[in-house]
Amino acid sequence: MNVYHYTSLDAVKGILRNKDICLWGTRYDSLNDPTDCIYAEEDILPEFKEFLKEKSVNENELEDIKIYPYVVSFSRIEDDFNMWRMYKAEIAIEFDAEVIKKMVDAKQEKNSIASQDELFWGECKYPKGKKEKRQAFAELYNTTSSTDKPVIEAREILPLIKRPEFANENEYRLYAFDCNLAVGDGENARECEVPHNIYTKCIQNKDFILYKEFHLPVNSLKGFIINVRDDAYFEKVKSHLELILLSSNIMKKMNIRKTRNGQNINLNI
Image 1: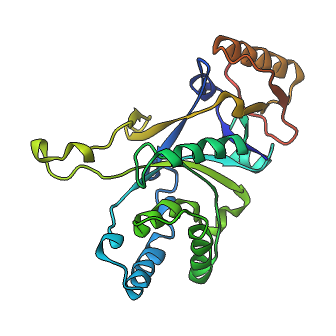
Image 2: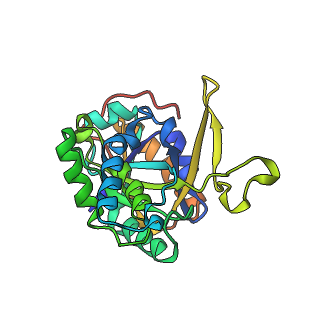
């Protein structure tokens, strides 16, 4: 199965690095909807904790820490007008979802729960109402490996539960967390609890955006869809993209094609 990351042409220059694919995962509170990744949290977590207490789990298993997701979005939908419009996208990058999943699975085998280097990958669910939220959570939780930190594990799958209004996005998410945030100030902060691998950028309204870098294997990259209707302009953009690939030492034949369903966007090339 292939998935698509809708973005700008300018972003492609940063994504295609030297023999590397690098995507930025934006922290949840810098997304367009800052409540997106925590939509199900207030309904699910209190009930889940009560359920665990009724099962007489020990105090260690009830341990809970606040973790903050950083998300890269993909869609199962190829070359979709609404996706082009929503992301104001100029290009859709095509990835092999199975390659991404295998990479994530391999990393999870090496890392402990709530590791700041751990990655997660999954298909979003779009429940309507509290009952469907519970059902969606149960389905996701039952697919995870059992650990001695079930509350933290629950927090790790909640970013896959989204509002039903966004169901037409058919979204898959690659994500990671800030976790074990520093406790105390200065010398009193425990070093092992200081977040790392976090970057910042400043946008036009002078707000800061926090993000993490997600490095994907080159063989996950399948192709590109360019959102331009004019044939001559498409050939120009395609040739520039091929040069970027060559300069990034990504020596792989790519399927570069023109949109059938996009909209006319002014590409500043």
